[in-house]
Length: 145
Image 1 (tube, helix red, strand yellow):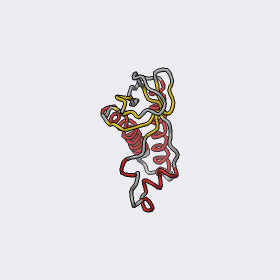
Image 2: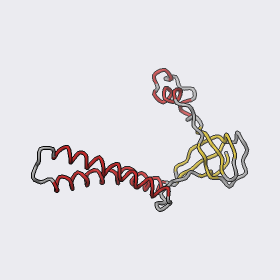
Image 3: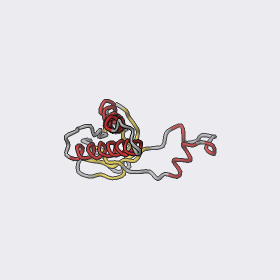
Image 4: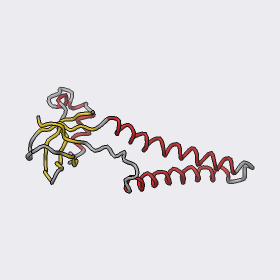
């Protein structure tokens, strides 16, 4: 499990909305002026994330939020590897079908690769919406600090 400290900002039925706390190394560092983490953190606003929770909590509580590594790995493989495979497969099929090397063969190959890439992203999105693929890694609150 990958764990992170967070602060509860809102409570719903069996979900709490949390914001990630600042890392301990970023609090009083003397290198703030040249630190990219501090620069990015100051530009980007904190974003609240819904998290499943069965523990009785109140707003302002510090909690440990965890996510399963295996689900995260499978989701990343699905979202990165499958579109890449589709891209190369689409280009390979178009190259095989256009073996006579016509005038616009490269354009058709590139278009086929792009189309198969976009089609794979659309299919992954539809499959996740229909819950066919249960790779959505949901974080959970494991304990109160």
